[in-house]
Length: 176
Image (cartoon, rainbow, N blue to C red):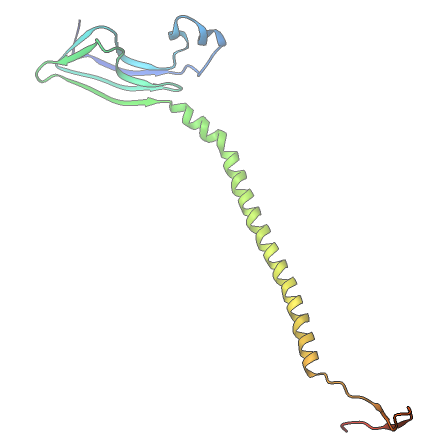
């Protein structure tokens, strides 16, 4: 096993990009393409902690930051009475966040512009439909109004005088 007493692991930074080349992804040694940062890695081992220990200020631009990486089920750690392990200020994927936001900003802006254009087109369509409806309603109301006032007033009338077909013509008007 390993004993740890008054150890300070600080200021680790991994700036490796996500992938340098295709060989790194398929290479047998996966650490060549690894973007993670580890303060302590344990595999099939025991760690005993004494006194005050700290792991802090670790940053992985495109991977994970781990203070204590226990890599299997057989590894374990114990702390003696009063011993501490302070793990703080770990940043994972610190540059991925910035790149993702910058990458999607134009799409967000285009989406907002598209939504505004859609709202304007709906307003214009509604306005045009209401004007057309108003024209139709005005025509209907004028037709109904005229029909309800108008009455047929004959200027002349032919009155039959006999069954033989003779007629009497008389001119008369109504009103003034």
